[in-house]
Length: 469
Image 1 (tube, rainbow, N blue to C red):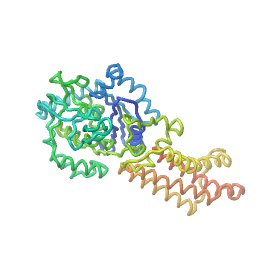
Image 2: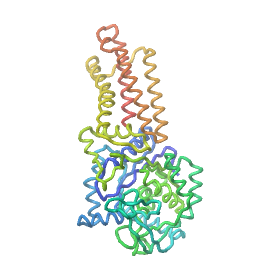
Image 3: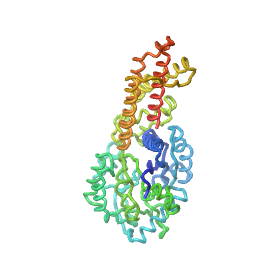
Image 4: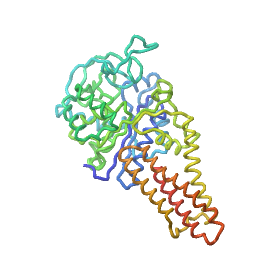
């Protein structure tokens, strides 16, 4: 059991079939802000991210680019996915690739354990498969195609035709865990968040679970099934295990006990994998389920989900090259209610940058720094006797920190930022009211000047400290 002050948070591990866009960076930044907040609070914090490099989609992408899957994955990781972390100023503690030995060994150990315990059996399966999702689709997951795909059934997410597959597979007895999952959702209503995602997951499970096909025999790019080399592990079954293989599963029990269970931050479109399949796998293995699964909303461009296949992806560096990483991080977590879908526009980004960062906090900080340099040689003076005005600032700061902490505990990052911003607004009003430039004209009010600048400097530090997390 992890200690009470342990905070282990994960992003999804991202497919390396192409370069990252701002939708990926949005998830990364949100997880990073949560990790920084807990780290600064003194919690034993661990932030994991990484890449998912197995599966049919990766194989086909590599072949289309006339290379091997491993070479393609390595190229994308080194040239795009790891550089992304520097672009957005990520503070991750680990980066896992599913092609690493520590992961593949852990996957095989986990799978063998489930097989030995009778949770896996051989069978045949036929169904509609979406290569983009790497998932068999139910009829309710399909929609009528349009344009070139008219008169065909297509994946509702990728808008591309599904394939009818029939093959001998190994199956995980997921249906056996239906009632235990429903009990989990009932006894721990905050296990899945936000409520809209929770309701969708609960409804899905109540309709009945089928056993899950967890191997593929029609291609060989994946982790080998330990008792049958003709099969590779289904990419999602493989990928989900990264959360424990990175934390020491099968190799470092002490570290696993210290880190696990984790908080999973994912896009809402993959919440079902994390809130249904994953906890069922853990239950079968006798491991704790995650602390929380939070399925955030999509970034929308022109009313549609950010997508590489639809050419609506925007590279993070397109934004950071102009506005910087701090503005990137601030904008996406301030402008969008975390958990809901949110639309991105260059106009809104520019407007918020000017109004809030430049004219709000930026102007405040520059004025305070300039006055400290002019009146006190760049040093923060000691505070003298305080008045009701300073008491008001202290109250606002303490309330903002408390409200922000409470918001973070609910994953309401946008609310936390709004709480911190009350400090900025209050300090701007305080400076206008106290007029330190007037106080500086008379030696008799120098102590008062020191108190005002001490209060504003400390207030700026608190607001920047909270918002920078």
